[in-house]
Amino acid sequence: MEGKEEDVSLGANKFPERQPIGTAAQSQDDGKDYKEPPPAPLFEPSELTSWSFYRAGIAEFVATFLFLYITILTVMGVNRSSSKCATVGIQGIAWSFGGMIFALVYCTAGISGGHINPAVTFGLFLARKLSLTRAVFYMVMQCLGAICGAGVVKGFEGKTFYGSHNGGANFVAPGYTKGDGLGAEIVGTFILVYTVFSATDAKRNARDSHVPLLAPLPIGFAVFLVHLATIPITGTGINPARSLGAAIIFNKHRGWNDHWIFWVGPFIGAALAALYHQVVIRAMPFKSS
Image (cartoon, rainbow, N blue to C red; front, side):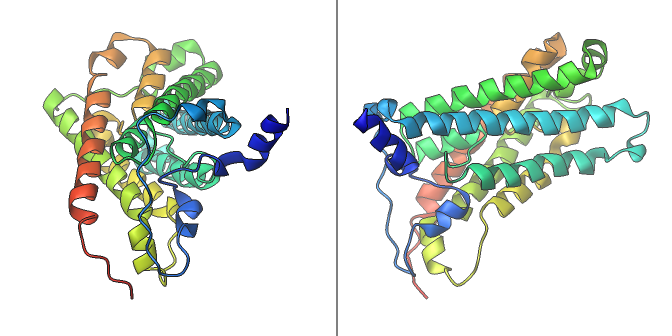
């Protein structure tokens, strides 16, 4: 019992994130001294006995649930109107996605790292910022949260209306090819994951410690901009959990026909961002001001 109480008191500090996001990312280095964080082990079985590990998974579930709830509800609200000019329109949809990422990353950064996206988790795993154990657990919890969030929206909107207005599911829009959709997802996810790496890089925090940076802000803004650009093409996935949750609850052929694009594209984009960050950005010489 004492061991369990000690584990709870230690919380996230017992198994800290290798790549924290948000305010946690800016408290890693004292002053301007740069310290390279150690790579995470591939497997870390001891995490499975830690309450902080499961607490982080719960945080990812709740954050992804809230993310899908607000964003899909916004999409359905726009679809409900006969004219997008009478609603928030595409710009409002983009703001709901970007704004929710900003808020949720800020809220969960100190608990789970604020991933809220299997592609982000995958990119950080490739960069050895977290273990495979934690990465798989996060992805499962993110997908479950997304399914529940989309399910609540369907309950609000009603089965008939939800089904007739595509349920916020991602698919390649008419006039575009599957290659167009895949390319949009790869580039969009690259922008997002590259922003995550850049905004939370310990070397940059040390070098530019005189420049205040709230990491969730550029991350949320990147999501907003990508949505502005690619909503007309794919509805913007760049988050496999978001696409899966909407597809499962919508559960029609149109939602599944192009679904592979919203896993393959984001994972390729995340891998390219991780590679670019590790090979190009991390290889740059460090100069403390």
